[in-house]
Amino acid sequence: MHKICTIFSNDFFVVGESTLVPNTHTIITSRRKMSAGATQNQKETSDYVKLISADDYEYIIDRKCAMASGTIKNMLSSPGQFTESIQNQIHFRDISGQILEKVCKYLYYKVKYTNTAKDADVPEFPIEPELALELLMAADFLDC
Image (cartoon, rainbow, N blue to C red; front, side, top):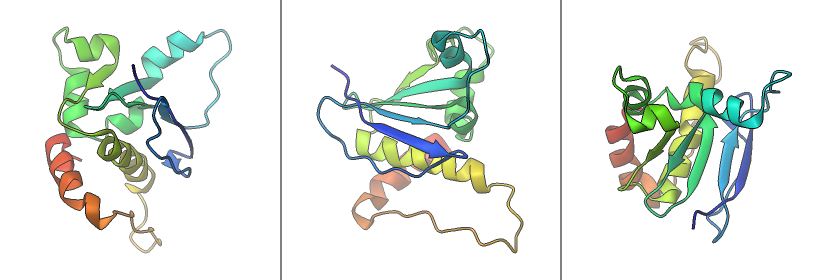
């Protein structure tokens, strides 16, 4: 069974905090409204990507933010008919839910601050010391 918690973002940056609670599912998304006439499934297919951790936590994030990772971008936009690009979901068998949640937050952070002026005050992205090594390995694999 997949686990679920909820995080909402404001302008592509996650402002909520989540804890990995059993039987919960994390949804990281921006507060954009869906266009009139589109069903939830139609919008989810085109605008969102589901990332699934090794311990079955699911993270639904904006496609634009997911594409900030070179590895995810290659998986979703490869010319072949790969399962990931068809289903808009990727299962990471070696990345835990706690690390994947932090990666998702970073992807939103990266999209928000990528084209910021050099003299602008960009806040530091918080990384807990106990997560640093695993997060570094995941970031290297995900190219983000």
